[in-house]
Image (cartoon, rainbow, N blue to C red; front, side, top):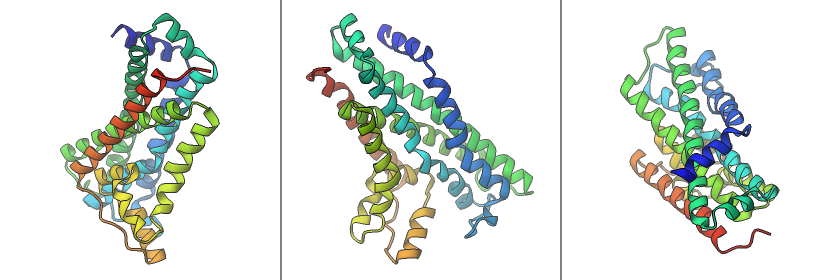
Length: 264
């Protein structure tokens, strides 16, 4: 707890929490706000309305398309420590690297959870106000809406940890950013275009996150344009377990890799 407190104090002295908050509002909840205001029925092609469970899931699922943002934040935060050699100072103060790395991982996971909670709160308010604005009754009960938003918040924390793992693996900032952005923003979507290979998409981080809200809009659009059959999403519980598995792998990489590597 002493190391975790130190890491949280260090983070509070930087601009990273502020940037995380701004990204959560603008990127995490921005699409949901925009679509809720204009109405999903007005989109091209039209989407189900907010008076249906499918419509609410689609609007909230748009936030899943922006999960690469917490990945990038985690990647930049970790690689910046290698770039400016501040992590070396931490290791000199506390020679037991596993304690330092564990505290850093926990601090970034909490930062990712904060991103997810703010993003989910903005998205949740957007769908509620959007339904009221258009004179509709929201398609899901409050309890189910809160559960979906909580899952999305936890998914954001997982993606932040994934970014930390990528940063610890690559260490070089531009390389790590290229890997994170190229995979989460490009490669996962390209895989949906390849017959046969598209079957693995539900088991990837993006597909597992989409399972939480049953978000199939992108996969259905790709299927309609390319005639490549989209693979069914995992059940929400299994999707959450898959995300936790990726978080465990990323956490292991973030803690174990720097233990045996030189900082130079």
